[in-house]
Image (tube, rainbow, N blue to C red; front, side, top):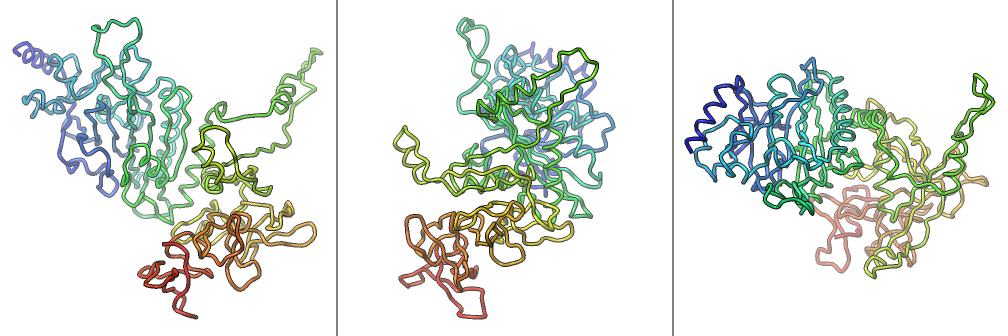
Length: 571
């Protein structure tokens, strides 16, 4: 014990900086690093809150899991005032003594972080990682709050093991660093009057820990299986301008922590749903209100598409070609002159590319379409009737599940939405498709199909859409025909899902109807929720769809021009 005290005094006598942190019961001291001052919710309740500071100034906040010995997230703001934000290495990585007060009560008032050479035997190691845990593992001490986003004292404060998690070296140095650099450039371009709130997190694996004991390792050489390796790493961004709401934007991205792990950009609400599944939490929330506002839609899409254009992710693990196509491309690329001329007399030009995407269900197609439009500005045009059930030979449960779904084959095409400056996306609250003109939000027709309800092809320059009417249709070579409306699918009065080939619509009748799978036509609701009534009507919020003592489903509707009630479809 006396040796520990002497070593501690000696260490602090030579340190000219005081890297500090406080393990706190609430984030009140560093709440300025959270959007609206509210921390993310429904993460591990046993994790420790840390307000990270240096020389008496708070720089970011961390939620730390002693069980996994990694942070679950770090919350911070982007420092636009840094003139030199080039990443800088430091030889010092710090540990947090206050995380070990259960092992030594003397750590309670010790708010200076230390390098882990100044530690008392095994006590510090009980609840946190040390540098030796990362040695010779193939994993980096991956920053959650990037040191390149900070400057001066703030940068040094990020070099704490409570702000790092094991990241695969290739993933961290190649893929994740590209996204950090791309995000940094975007944030630097924003008006400095605004504030960019960021949360970067790690999803702990269930059983993968480092250091691993290999076959010929001495079991007494070090402590093994101590620090959990994350399966995924993610970042959520919320930029708020105090004067111009049109400048607000929000999005997130998430990557698989593997050497060639893909990184996907997502809307905040989509990232929240994904993380809820990965963390196994039902009420997880990163930002209050998901940091989503209607008037920020145009800026968000612009930012997301810029990230996509600036950061080219490897396609090798996602692209499949037929042998004929692959051989054709190889032949073209390898075809070169051998006459020894000083100029090339042959050049290769790719004139056309047709890429089909196969989805296992209508719902997967719908969700995939929304992401393609939002991120890439492309749609996946259904250019052939829906195939029959997809049957997988194998496990009975998988076979049964896939027999109930339909395979959808669609072709990638540029999105074309007249009058829109953003993509035409489905608004769940409004129950229809909307886009922004740059000054206002308007209803729109998505690019989704060139097949009519009778299976006839639309003209190439006139795919399915409303085209000035209140129903979906297109011109064909012979005349015109109705199109089945785009997803989501409606539901019949008896509660059956409508078929995608004949989704809920009027089709020249005075009422809404559709064809369910394997059945005759029925009256239908356009959406499968309790506020949707038949004939396109809407149930009152205070009177959602239910039986209300009757043998059929009904509700009071908002339509005051006719009967005050109507049939509905879903409880």
